[in-house]
Length: 180
Image 1 (cartoon, rainbow, N blue to C red):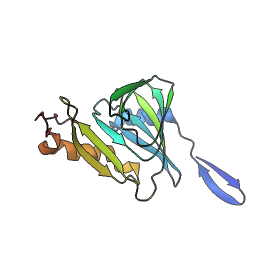
Image 2: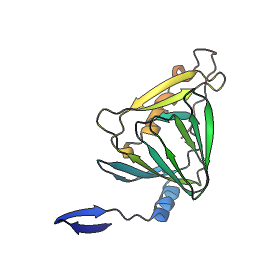
Image 3: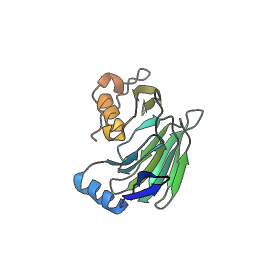
Image 4: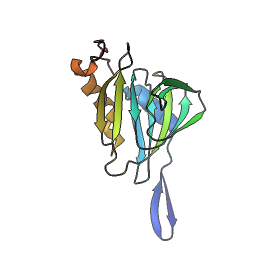
């Protein structure tokens, strides 16, 4: 980390070795590593999101850079129709706030994600849809004030732990619980 002196104030500028972090995530089996979180922004490295089947809505923009491997970003448009944006290795995607999205990439793939830090009272939402009829099954909400708390995993734990949350009220299809 570099420390810079300017206007008589000392502040730290993170200088991170992304390759080292990717190796750490592979060795430990962890899925995320927070690089920083301050009043303005948060950044983290994510490994493998092959299991994702929900759509995340957050009040911030997201910048997603494919460090290694390719990203298939599933998202829903204003008419709630699902699409897929391909983000190949070495490419970057800007996603506006409140776009329902589901980043999916293999366990050998890594994404650098940068977002605006959440403002007080802002809520993130996680939506699951029926695999058979596309009916909205369940919504989880979280206040994301520290990505180290891993809100995605917490949302999945609640969803997977309830057959009622995973059962479609329209057609009766039960979405299988998945292992993270």
